[in-house]
Figure 1 (cartoon, helix red, strand yellow):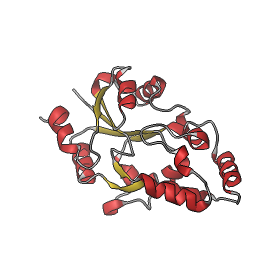
Figure 2 (spheres, rainbow, N blue to C red; figure 1 turned 180 degrees about the vertical axis):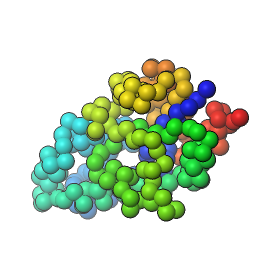
Figure 3 (cartoon, rainbow, N blue to C red; figure 1 turned 30 degrees about the vertical axis):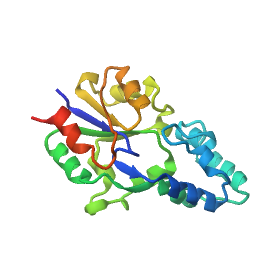
Figure 4 (cartoon, rainbow, N blue to C red; figure 1 turned 90 degrees about the vertical axis):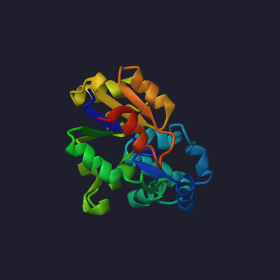
Length: 209
């Protein structure tokens, strides 16, 4: 019986827009920004290093300032990175509320960085009046753990930290390499193929009572 629902952020909970983020980073002065952000893969260079915890905020800001040829602030990077966010998956908030009421434990497991998380975890991001982060029992983030999907170690960390059983856990992601990583430790998975309309199919396949 499933007890734990674990969601990826981009492409699952949120519908992404790639080009707007590229535009914002280029507006900061980052040339060929698209070379760092290949769709469907983990980010490259300093953008990957901040997400897997190899470098911290200050080192990242120093590095991107050097690349852009001027001093870049935390707020400027956060605004540029938030360009990936377009909108929440339709019907998501109501469904999260229902799953919560039904007794499921809700989590996020995301390859992400402190700039994006400053929005996701902030009380100012409160669609329909409720801070988004409050829907979840815990949010697991790659840069905080020092591991990233699809490394099986990040799933093992989550299971141990959350006192979850793999067979009682369903992981939802839009990248096949990430669902395969979860499956390698025995977690049930659902691969999102349409970030606008995956919820009914998920319910029908896994959560229909």
